[in-house]
Image (cartoon, rainbow over all chains, first blue to last red; front, side, top):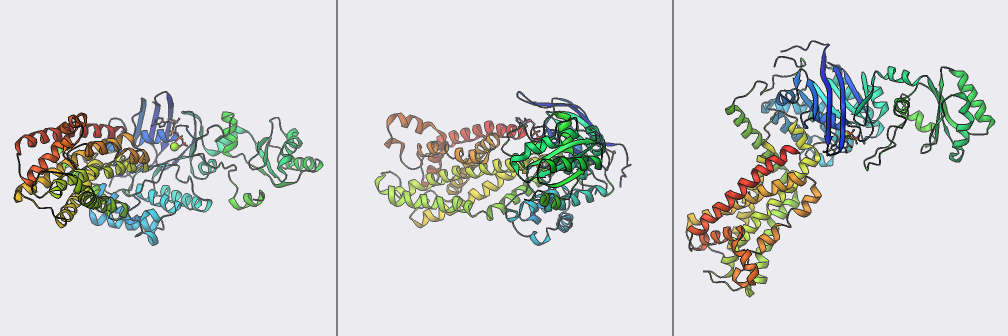
Length: 348
Length: 275
Ligand SMILES: Nc1ncnc2c1ncn2[C@@H]1O[C@H](COP(=O)(O)OP(=O)(O)OP(=O)(O)O)[C@@H](O)[C@H]1O
Ligand SMILES: [Mg+2]
């Protein structure tokens, strides 16, 4: 058994570029991932996340730059890379006519595990991903969350040292997403190195040890979630406005709390204003001003900046606002708060 | 290849650099695994069985009883003798529809991406699809022979030529599947493939000697019908089934089939690499 010395990078990427015709998907990205840690690759639609994953998993050849996975060059020794990686792509790559169990067993065979071992491995994974009840049903009948879990299980059949997950929770409801997060955390505690892409700011916040923010094919920021938040500078007072038509008035009422103009989210009727480190004084002031203006609010609170705020501060645009992609996802705003509070707070 | 693996990683077979022989063996094994996977999927897709069995049978009955009376042919046993090789050839060609659609779907779903990120044989997706489709096609041909026999078809030329006819039909079908595989890999989008996958086969199979003698067509069509591969292959199948000159069409058929394979298999492989 070869041992993995912990420490040292499992993935090293330097100067990676890739164009599709006139579209520059990657314009030279660099990053590295320490062994046994999670890198969150965060970016809006079209940022280049999938392209980076496809290059690292040997599916696409880059135009320039180098990429090493556990010291193996994706360009020069793709077969050696394939032996140690697992991939769960952006869409669940499962064979719908086959049962969950058959899907996993066949992958085991294709990884050249002996027949008996393929069966055992399928059973282990079905248990671990709570798919035993549905194991003998065609995957066509699986819910979105189950299909995602099966897909993730499929990427683990050969116990890869390095795992790539491209938007593993996109399209899942909050409960399934939380379940998926738990699974992903467990994986990494077992020593796997993980690169995970996401558009969900809170997801990177929750899971990743290190985050890179990618926009238009470039890494525009890198660091831990805390260092990124510090870049934004200070806390945020945020609240929902009951009467949507008074959103503007609400923003005006709290504008004096900050040098930066308040942020409005008209879709969800939420106002956020950066207040540096004034702490509770800022909250008191905000409540007074809003009260004086006769504006009813919900869920007013002081919070640490979310990665959404980070994105805004770094790029000048919000994470998901600019593209009009048909697969555009529901935008999620705040980072750390538990789901239910937020929903009540907004009176949805 | 010493760098690393996590402690839990099993010593997966293939973590050494395999020689040519072992590569070949794994290639065959992977191809068979994918074949098996496809066959399981087929048995769970009733629409496909309808397409592979019921539709060809309907064709036999329609042509035999609806058009048959109006079509004059000069072969032993009458129109049903003429029709059977034609309809078997046509059905073998139409079986390729499933090839294109199946491959396009696999690409679209990301299944092919997963395979390509694994240390398995690159050829397995194509080999597994063509093998499964060939088996399905053989089933179609056997069903057609049974139904045709029930409505009056008989071989007039002995056992081995009859086997030869079935073999040629399958070889023809595999060739069309190779073209179809290229279409599936090149277009990739399941819906586009589904609408385009058969269109090109209609003129090729119907403007041929499959259902009616070419001499009944207008002159300008005859020029095409007489010289296109479907007519050539089906004429050869007819000679094998009913008796008649074998040699000329045998050569022409072989040249066409080998030629088409030689062009489209590499094209399909190249399109697959680009996925
Ligand atoms: N095969 C391709 N052909 C042409 N353009 C492509 C191809 N793949 C990606 N692109 C383009 O490259 C850019 C980056 O795409 P990529 O899929 O990497 O983005 P992403 O960050 O994964 O986005 P999303 O969040 O929508 O999945 C996009 O503009 C996309 O249109
Ligand atoms: Mg993507």
